[in-house]
Length: 405
Ligand SMILES: Nc1ncnc2c1ncn2[C@@H]1O[C@H](COP(=O)(O)OP(=O)(O)OP(=O)(O)O)[C@@H](O)[C@H]1O
Ligand SMILES: C[C@@](O)(CCO)CC(=O)[O-]
Image (cartoon, rainbow, N blue to C red; front, side, top):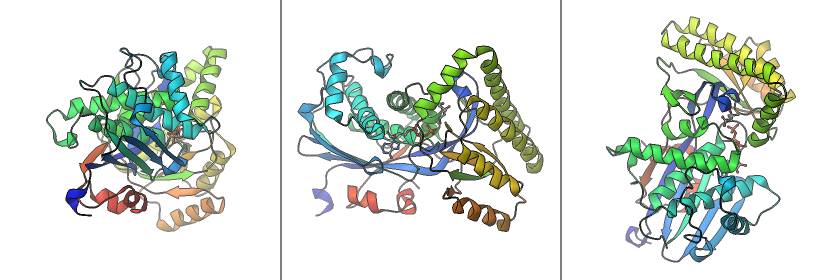
């Protein structure tokens, strides 16, 4: 096949995130501090000559095809889709999308498919000319799915970016455009919609970090600000591999808050103060050791409050115990209930100590990641060689990252 035989193809990337402070409290308009991760999702988009839509999501074992006529485009007028929660979508549209999703048992699959179909339908409804072209969309992630590192936001940002490019709402090289800010706002808004499908009640912090990258403070309803004076941190991420659902954990905290408002509200307020203290600690541009003293205190305080909200797990307490034996401070990150913990490592901690901790954590069956934080957000490039969806599935991280240099 020569390059000229190839259909138009695009590669999209979107990072995961680590919440340093403020998970759960951020759902209730408190401040959170979060940063993008070097671990990302990559999406391959190919326009097709036939009218087939193919969705390939190997991380959640989905491979679906539909013809474009099966998708309920323009079937239901849905003018206020941007302001309505997806659970309030018109009944007719809901039942058509459920029929197309056709997987009742496995939530991770149905949420991923539904998020894709929902975004496509509401985006297409806003296009000037009806969309009638087939395409293949394949997502492959280097993030553990459902483990607290923002896999759903990374997936949501990747599909929002790709679909906006597909329907002609943003150019592939949106990051180089003078309208970049506007395009990023659009990506973030649609990614939030996909997060609403997957999460139920997301604060928006995860998709904001996955869209814009960097290290941020975030408050629901007010958006984000760059974390001034942010210094790169040595972080160890440990995935306990205990499955959990962000949706259910967020709902659980909501129930507690309703039952014990006078107890829970001050806890959420303390978490807000922790995030603000972290912001100010970076701003002071003090030496790294003094900064780490403060951050380590905040780690302990924030974790204990989260534990009090009921979102820790014995596996996370185990990570805390193992790391504490070597003098390292750890808190859960993301929704908790299993999933990931983040350990803050001071500059003066030797590789021998880190290796010992790594081997103890691995002995427990946990996965560990040492990755950089605060890097780029969503990005896209046009593919011009003979890349295919199988190429995406087989390529390693360095190869894929190279496309975005
Ligand atoms: N690579 C992927 N491909 C398809 N769907 C994905 C992918 N990654 C995540 N998802 C969707 O997101 C869901 C996981 O979302 P969830 O919010 O529970 O986890 P998370 O985003 O990793 O954690 P947290 O919200 O705590 O950071 C999956 O069940 C699936 O529906
Ligand atoms: C638990 C939570 O605060 C973070 C999940 O990464 C939920 C959210 O902010 O949407």
